[in-house]
Length: 175
Length: 175
Picture 1 (cartoon, rainbow over the protein chains, first blue to last red):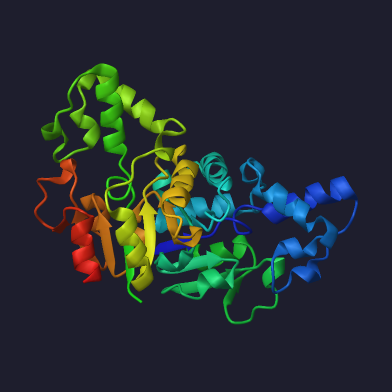
Picture 2: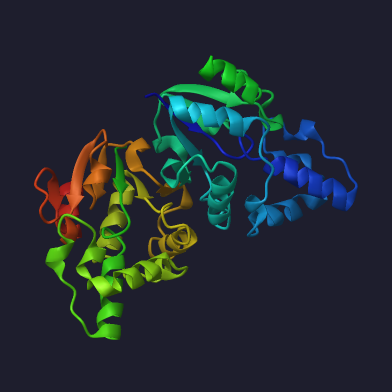
């Protein structure tokens, strides 16, 4: 059975979307998607509030109640039947996120088991046949086929096969 | 630089030792090391108290205050200079352990960074040149050289190169 490694944030969970919803509700100010390109989505928020966004992201609870990326549940349910699937998140940078992420996965991807979850600092030591991730730094050392999941911050990347949404993931892996 | 994967429990951290200390203090009963062989160290505790041991292990805080396995700090400090070192723990089975383990590593192995820590369910997707682990299930799929770190539960294993303590690890990797 071929092995697929799937990232969490901006691929199946939506921390950027949650932050934007909260920010525009609280501050009635727009985010600038162009400023995210080539860097982090945090940079799209007005400079005077980026520190506040970081604090919110680092606090317990933030990763517990994130929206699910559209169609990811349905597609991964089928992928899980045909492939050996692992969800791998570079979460160790955010100590408070660990249990929140595990609880979130158990709630929204209850067809997976804890044996399929990995929280790491650096993804360079995981291997498999395919990886789907929104960060080039997580693709670059991967020994298998690499797919860049589209996110505002990576729109200028041209070196990787791009998957724009979960319908395209389904087309590629399930047809 | 060659990559070494090092396990946490019973290799650098001592949950069994902590549990035995607590148990003999609380219940004044001995543990039976022979009953651990070929199974889990929990089985060495009197049957009527194994559930209690499990509950203690699953509770927040248990993995935060464990003893450090003798000489592991000094040896890993030197290994970290000559190899690419990752600490990989199958911790996702124990949701409350995740932050405790991270805090414990930051306290006792402060010369390492969060980029070197991995918490997973199944170790079959990590790869490197060497692995040191007390469980055969974590060695069996590893693509590099495998070393079984001696623990009462694995004394009957004969299929792997055995490392009995950190002095032997030092002999092997640092001489």
